[in-house]
Image 1 (cartoon, protein in one colour):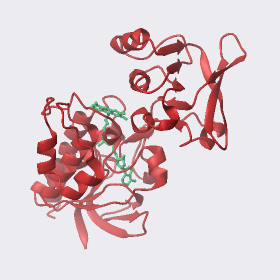
Image 2 (image 1 turned 30 degrees about the horizontal axis):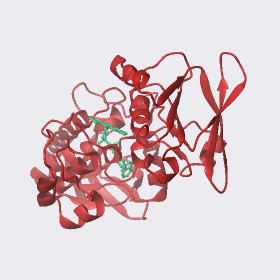
Image 3 (image 1 turned 120 degrees about the horizontal axis):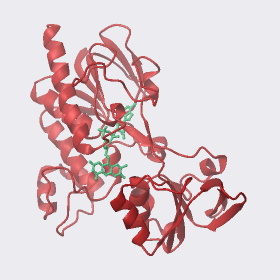
Length: 351
Ligand code: FAD
């Protein structure tokens, strides 16, 4: 059987595309990613980046309120108990996991089929296109919407790799509340908005948060800089680069050795955790040169205001093709565009 539309990904772009394609009777098939340990560590589990955050205050249509009743009534029972407990019973803005489960459910309600697996290989030489999953299944499709998003960057140190999951994390919201970090000093690397967001979040649990920056300036917006500077639990250290993550096999991370790149020498920061907030990498490795990418590895759109890629019938949506806006609402917007582009392509091909 040849699919009409395959959607790869599970963030706002993928679900928006699925809702539109399903409502156009195209019976989309979504590969939402695999629930593997590797994906957990990389931050690419099903439901995408928003699933890693707490409240989302800027997604239109979700003013703060008593959302738990609505979510319980809208999302199938087994996902509420598996993915959404505890639902907050107080007034709150929609959380990332709530929003993503609502989107997934909306797509499923219109007949979207979902496979919980990674696509690891594409053959795009000529249509219909071939796909292979991590689980070893093969599929054929007339069109593909790539909505695989992006993932957090790491420093690439051997010691960082050694302590991943034992004190080294790229997601404060996912890991910050773990007992190992509570009332302990922590280190955050980075100087952008997300670094300040992570550091601020961690102050809820940590005794102190040290922010290390390579230069003597934040990249964060003024309002976020102010937030960091006025938080009594955040200490800002300029001209510092992580040299080594210190620790032992039993307890994991015990400190961070940082180089002073202006004055020379190193300094040890006792810490039970290192949180990286140094940007993202698009999830495009599996494309293996078959779709044109830009110099940062993001998919290139070939036509202004369209989601066309370098391969006819293959469209891109969300952060995988956007290193500039990187928002849930822009991802959902391009997801909608990609579904409409796929629908029109299929109609033009008489499929
Ligand atoms: P993503 O959310 O990146 O999801 C893509 C998913 O596709 C991956 O996670 C993975 O599960 C799946 N996938 C990847 N590769 C494959 C493959 N080969 N096969 C199958 N599946 C695959 N934005 C806002 O607008 N408001 C916020 O408040 C906000 N807060 C944020 C907080 C945090 C901590 C983070 C990290 C991001 C936040 N963002 C926020 C940004 C927002 O999450 C992203 O812009 C948005 O999620 C991008 O959506 P996407 O659909 O492109 O894909």
